[in-house]
Image: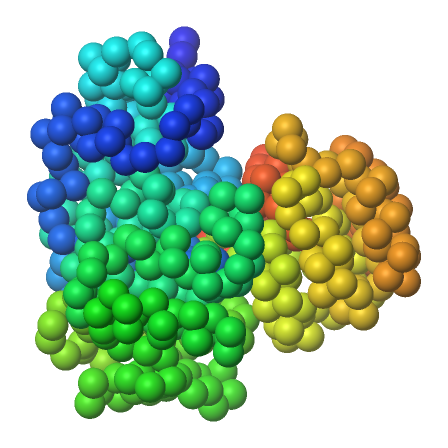
Length: 441
């Protein structure tokens, strides 16, 4: 017998990923048919190239810790579709997720069947998230944008009470523009002119110049990492200073040096959102307990296995910078890439950081031919082999790494979904599952 959740997932899989026409008019109509649930609570809108999911989860955790019932909308999911919608931490229960999705389906069926009426998969998921937050009585929501900003289905909240820009790098240049300045403009388009609720994370020099020019022209203001709030590290501990507050002795539940910037940006966003000082003890507890599936996530065993969602050049560079902290022995990377990604730049980042590459193919229709990945890797001096089936690629990588080495799975969130689902089915424990089993302190 098919469950309500299975029926909801089947409906989602039957929808187009992208619409016939760019624009938000259809999304506004869909939400109006649902009673505009996104107007029932204030939001934090998170845009940027990398770090959106981690920043969103940490910001939401801090808001929840301060007594606000907080929804979090994330994309994409790693294993289960309901991972995209959270209320006060855990993913929405399958039956609640199904109710929200089917509620949106019913509203969508009344919109007509013309090309401009047919809702997309992401529009339904976004509307379902907004509806679920309203049904759960949320006091706040943290909303991660999917693609870009200006025409993203999440962009119906006018940037939220706070608009967060995590960082900027070249991505989706066919849709967002082929310069850093153009991409910054698309992402910052979510914030209304004159908004003073901007929070900006760490930017490279070119992006910093572009973003400051845009904010001047559009009269946007707020807090910038490095100017209005700062983050420092002392060993494993992190200190964030903002608006007269100092939050020290922070131990992050997520790994990687780049997560320090995300944590600081999340704290600044939470502080701007509440408009009141944050409680240091609640901040410490919240950030300690945050987990992000598929972000430097380690599976126990020999060799050790680490999966990471790095799927663009900037993300791969951040992963490589952190690799010495988490990897041991011979490092073998299992890599799948989508065909619209800059394969050369991503493999260049891996060169010198891994001992070998096992190229494979995720189940996504746009997954790049593994033979192309091998050719590019070998041109960079990386030993490489193609093993098209992901499960076989993992077995080959384990053999190449040896019991004291490390298998690193990266390059595509779709590959992570394939691999992580297989590991979960095999009974492997993850840091997330271990944390859920721990008794409360």
